[in-house]
Length: 228
Image (cartoon, rainbow, N blue to C red; front, side, top):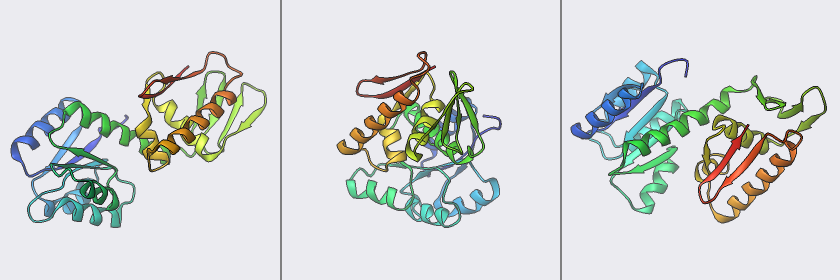
């Protein structure tokens, strides 16, 4: 990333907050910590973070209430909830009020970081309107949703195909997790939606087939990998 990614961490457990803050900072993130929900809004307005890590049970104002307030002024900011509450209704409420992800305590720092990176990557789709990406012997015009093979014919992509290809390219030669892409593009990861995504993958393979060096492989039980 061209600039340091700023994380706003709202967590009232001092020891946990210290561990998370220190761990993220050693990985190059800038972390601003709030110890209660009431301080989040003013801190957000001062620093304009790239992502919000938000505890649910906090003094003065709970995380769900804070998320609602943030969403009133910023519909795009990635929000990850941290919580010891594990009932389904709590998870549902977290997503309903505007959360993008939900991590139950106790959690590993590696899992938190992976989830953060996934969300930060996903926001780049909205900034890619003028981007043209090289894919082997193709060029991919994100705004036009179009693939062009060298100087030859162009292939039109549907909106969903274009989004899916963009994410695969963000994870080029790495694994793109099925659950992440399903929840990001389809808002659900149920069986029928997963089958639908498989169909889109097949269509992309066909549209990229003029370049035999490009492969979209299925990593069984995990996701897909675009090899270029």
